[in-house]
Amino acid sequence: MSKPGKQPNFSTGQPFKILKENAYAHTALSELLSAKDVPDPQLAYVYGPSGCGKSALISSELPTFSSTHPDAEFLLITASEFAAKYAAASSNRRIPDFQKKIRSLNLMIMEDIQSLENRHNTQRELLSVIDEILKQGGRIILSSTKPPGELAHFHKKLVNRFHGGVCALIDPPKFQSRLDLLSLWATSDKIPLQNKELSLIAQKKALSPRELHALLNQLQTVSRINQKPMNTSFVKQYLEGNIEPPKTSIAKITKSVCKEFKISIKEIRSANRSQQFVRPRQCAMFLARELTQDSLEKIALYFNRKNHSTVIHACRQIQNDLEMSPGLRQQVSRIKHQMGVYLF
Image (cartoon, rainbow, N blue to C red; front, side):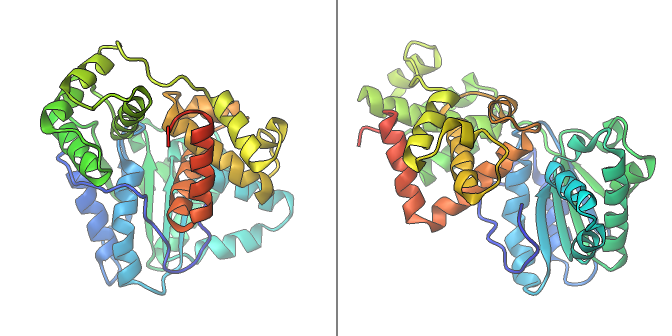
């Protein structure tokens, strides 16, 4: 969770491209965040299937807000994190302090709203937060895997607030968009794949942007391990399942991370939120997402987390930290080398 503050670092470490499938959502967020005065509407609700690029789109537009409103107070948080913070404030009898901080925001971004289903007390608090932020001229961005009308067991007034903003769907990318994304990432990451090979991937794999990027990285890894050039023959063999990807698992990754950070598997999977354990835990989640094909839900379950948004937050945090910390980059490189992911 990003703390309320100024001039956030919103980089995702991955270039973003406006596609046909996200163009309307992009326009909605751009107008909301670039307005110097109070925008109309003040709320944007972005929805689409997991992995379709909601977080990437939001992150791509936030630097505009930061430059236009350098003194603005902001918060980037998942709905599950909001619920946990609210529950902790309630238990510690610190609700007024919690409300004072969050209701004074100029911009609140909350992801995975659908995870608040059946959390009625938290929904009531969120309704109050939204009303207060909008009343003072602030802006709100929400993301979800579901449209407002499909949020079961949500307070009617809260759903009405969602409908009161601009609601924008992001569809999974079709072939041309998948090809455009693959070309962008291959160029950015200096992956030696030509348009012919990229077209094979785009045709064969009707995947989300997140899954496409993971596949591209895995192709590069398999090429290095097998010492084979990334030509048409290699790509075809890989896509047909004739070349095995590197065998690893969440458990193996976690074991390597624990060895690097000198902590136990019990500690990394615990609920302890000490930084001594949080950083390696986030690192293990990040690597599990990058190096395996396991779902966010499965990774969260391994680390005894109730919601996959914890994994999303961990991946985002480590990606940002990798850009700023040479020490962390060296640690991640050593972990990968230990697992045989890189040969150099």
